[in-house]
Image 1 (spheres, rainbow, N blue to C red):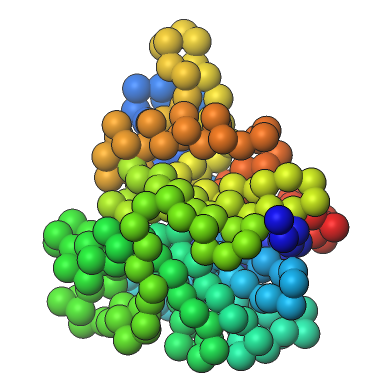
Image 2: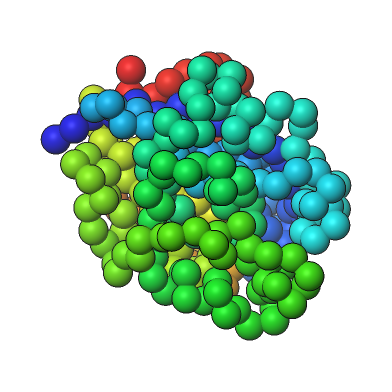
Length: 265
């Protein structure tokens, strides 16, 4: 099986209420839920066998993020995906594959720059994203808001459930946060890393809460709490250890990126 390396990249920060995103209201008394936190928006550059692959493309510029999504969110200068790749000496045209965990606004920006990339998403996710209920217009930047989704004009290969995308990389459904959310599994010499998108927002979400008889700490932001719960349990079952789980927004991603560590080297 092909081995790859994984480089985490931060494309900005979303200004997020701890109580409504990180932790379900039923377990607030066990965690610090006061105030806001700036969560990283992390994407992953996967390289190996001559391939350059992105898992998600990250968030928008600061103005758009604040106007339509989370006021206070910021994309610092030089943090857009194409700018971050340029720092690594990689042009957008060199990216041959993009695999989306889901199609929310902070995972799909600047896709039009990747003219040579084959893109993948779950069919259920794409179909809902193209015709969401009004509650999710902002999440998918539905045209009724006077904006256009980044992925609207892109050709996306649609997947149905668990499948291999290429040798050493496969996906499996991890619904709950969105209709067609998926986790992307990347094989490295150290083992399989699970890039789990927004299934969890903090590593606390995989911890048990014995006082409540919970086998996880459910997040506060979800589409379907039953799906979300079961998907987190499945993530814990599949992953070798928490070290092999890579969420988009976990604050711990900041330290990982600042360390300069490349996984699987």
